[in-house]
Length: 77
Length: 148
Image (cartoon, each protein chain N blue to C red):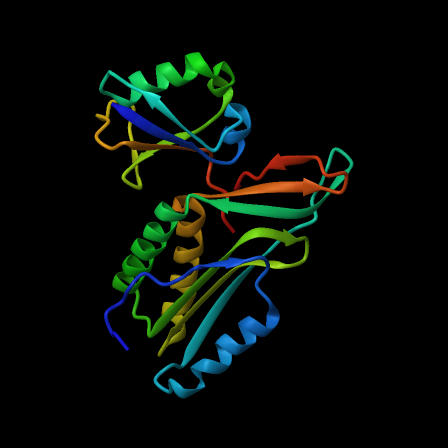
């Protein structure tokens, strides 16, 4: 499946892009993260959460949507 | 006008002006069941970190999720407290030190409700809404804001 991955804030600095498309053949968030960490080792040191369908998901969640978003710590206000 | 509560626009480009806040207060003079307003204003601080002063914060957000979250938080706050009305505005883009980046305004017949609602609202916004702040120093270097 083709996924669009979006990166915000400091994460976009690490990946040097705000979004990209990747081909993903496995099923869970943790499998996707493993792939992204291999591509961007510097992500390992960053704190972030993953959102799917505009909702935060855990690492064992299934990837059901074609858009996955990586969010650094929230800093509103 | 549709009376159903639809997601309202929260994000404003740049700083929130004193005029905007003043006008918002003035618009409530016709709502005479209100006996108490409470307002929270978030202002950008010129923190000094390792000898460098923060000049501005540049805000970005995952807007789709942020708008959804603001709507959820609004609905939850109306459920929890007896409020007549509620307004939330947050800046996107650059806001200089000393300028306002968050404006939260709640109104109710009675004061106890607004005191409790404003604290709940501001804390929940900071915790749950995907907004990010790039703190820009005078020399144009930057660091990422972390809420404490």
